[in-house]
Amino acid sequence: MLSRRHHRMVALLAAGTLLLVAAMPASADTWYSGQRTFGNASVEPAVDMADGSQIFLLTPAGAQTNANPRAHAPLYLVMYPGVSSVPASSLNCQPTNCDHANAFPPYGAAGYKGHDHLVGMPHTGDFNVAWDVYIIAFTPHGFGDGAINTRILTLSALNAAISAGDVAPPIDIHFAFNCSSVSSATYLMGTPFSTN
Image (cartoon, rainbow, N blue to C red; front, side, top):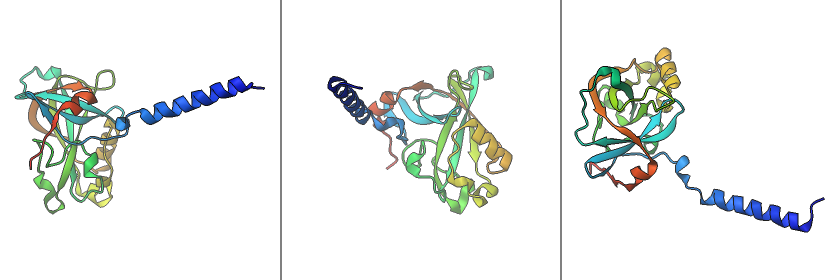
């Protein structure tokens, strides 16, 4: 049987735990959207394609690279059409809050909502500082079966979407650049980018 002192201790521990949980930042559940800039660099959200978690990438100005191809890793830009039910605010970039891939003409009348950046991170995927950009575009089949309404957040989901015919195989745009992983705190220190 617990004494009055033990009951009080358990109550204080429970209250303290609740306060700590309430004080925790919501960033673990918040998907940020858009580039932020400071100095001669930009930071933007991306997705660790091993587990679908949000990460952040810092890109120096003029970061195009000519590094040895063996030192490159893929960066997949998953392009979402305007008719997708995926909330634009959950995508890494939208046409109004980043300086790249602001349009995607192949979607025509379906419009263009935005994109996600899928990358591998150290110890979980194919990681390098030099990134080769590949476009991931939904096919008519992906429009028809509703695949456009679900974010692709992992390499296994991407491979499944390719196998199902929901997206085309990656399109190499023959562009490579340097960037590195940084913290959400670095991202939040930047000035939000806007095309307006």
